[in-house]
Image 1: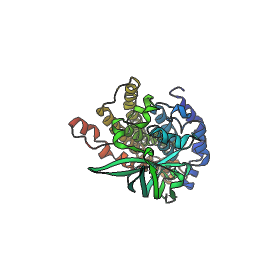
Image 2: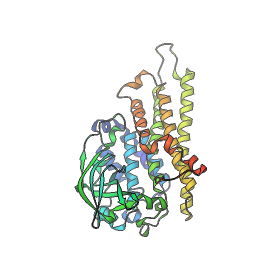
Image 3: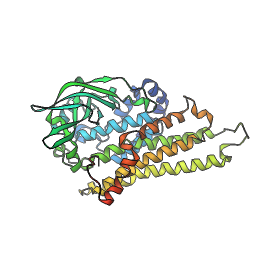
Image 4: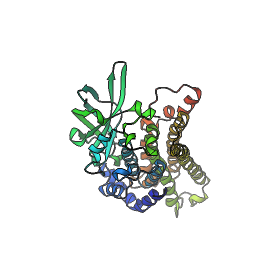
Length: 386
């Protein structure tokens, strides 16, 4: 499959995704038609190993597709990005875990909640999990979940991802929010669920590229750093939303005449300046994702290690991409006219969605955006999401 094939697929789907965007918000989850389209076209399985029928694509191709979806619906792009990346992460797990999920149906999907908010207790052959985990995007459409948890050690704790089947948890429908309403990012509730050792994956091992799944999935994309793969997946939707907002303002400006002085938007210097600035910010945001990914993909393709400096650069660049996307969306919203505030106007949804994307912990500009500087100054330490 060519590198641009995924975006070609998305462009065919965009009219339907755009038409269902309001429904996604009202239903507070991805419409079934959108989920099926993502699955049947292979978009959700873009990063899944080929041996399970996945496309095993370069992540940048996937992020480009997510950005394209974001121009029509931020919630749909978010679910595609987050859930799609989980197919990549499962490939890093022990082969037994991969077969647990995909043996009978390789199209089965996984949601997640990585913040270690639950309780983990060691048990014979594994661990027992209990508690509540929030923000599990797309969980209604998934049969498994990744949950973050802290494993007690003699000298501290170890952060791990735990893999649980749908029978081991409940979904608490508490997703009533201002932005990304259509993602269905509800709470996961677990009560005394046993998780065997082979269904866990250490973040420490992920940081150094030591994956049990490497034995059966030796492809270049499975040698990429987890932190960069995941964080780029939650940055790409913002770029798409911002690009869509700029396009929507231009579309709505056609034929619009000021009720105050009779001028058109094209005659308004403020509108022209804001659109120009926003367009440049969107392109800078997209470049912030593309540049480090082209470098990392090239290195793993040549079987070379990715230096920590490039990983820090990637994390910093993608979080700045989110920031530029927020600024671009707000910039054009302010010159879109008073009709932009109505519920049925895509622009107000775009603004709410991009703000919600910015609120994710991994998109915190001051924390993630400083990683490049910390690495350069030699003060980087304890950051496992690189």
